[in-house]
Image: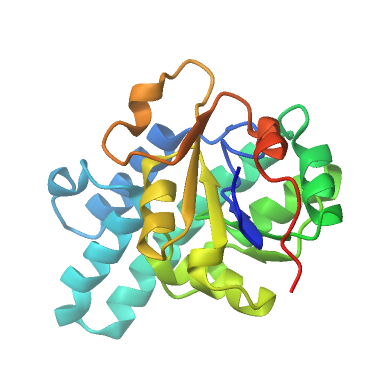
Amino acid sequence: MFDVDAVVFDFDGTLVEPSIDFEEMRQAVLRVIDTFGLDSMPFVPLHTLEAISLVKRRLAADGPDRVNAFDRAAAQAVIDIEVAAARRTRPYEGAPEMLTILSARGYGVAIVTRNCRAAVKTVLADHPLCFDVLLTRDDVTRVKPDPEHLLAALRPLGVAGERALMCGDHAMDITAGKRIGAKAVGVIPPGAGPDRFADVAPDLILERVSDLVHYVNGRRQA
C-alpha cells in the first residue's frame, strides 16, 4: 500500500490506448532533418523530441532564423501525426473511473505527457477525465524523464516529490519518478512483458492501470 498525497500519470499508453505511430513520427522528422542539409542517420537511435533538440543545437551556428525554421517544420510534422492519432484514441477500460475514485479519496491527480496540448485536448473532448493538473510538452521547458516536468505538476498541488507516486508505461516514467523521490508504478502495455521495466525496477508493476485503486486507499490527512 502506498502512503502518498498525489498520483502523477503518463497519458498515452497509460491512461489511454496508444495510437501514435512513433516510427512514422521518427521518419517524418528524419525527412525534415534531411531537407535542412544534415545527415539524418546519426539521429535515428534517438527519441524524436531529443533528436529535434540536438538538431537545433547543431544548427545554432547558422543563426536563429535557420533554427526557428527547422523547429517549426519539425514541430508541425510531429503535431500532425499526434492530432491524427488522437482522433482514434480512447481511455483504457476502467481508467476514467479510477481517476474519479482517486480524486474522491483526496489524492491530487496530475497528468504529464510528452504529447502536445492540441492532441491531448482532442482526446479529452471526446473522453473527459478527472484530474487537477495537466502538463503537456507545450507547458514546460523540460519534459520527462527530466524531473522538472513532474515537479512542475506537483507544485500547484502543494505536494513534494517524495509524497507522490508516478505511474507510467515507459521506463522514462519510472526514471522521472525516481529522480524526484517518488514511488513508481509501471503499467505493462498489451503485448509487452514485465521485463520492459527490468532496468528501472519500479516499486510495483501492473497489467491494468485501473488496478492501482487497490494500492492507494486514501490520502493521509494532516
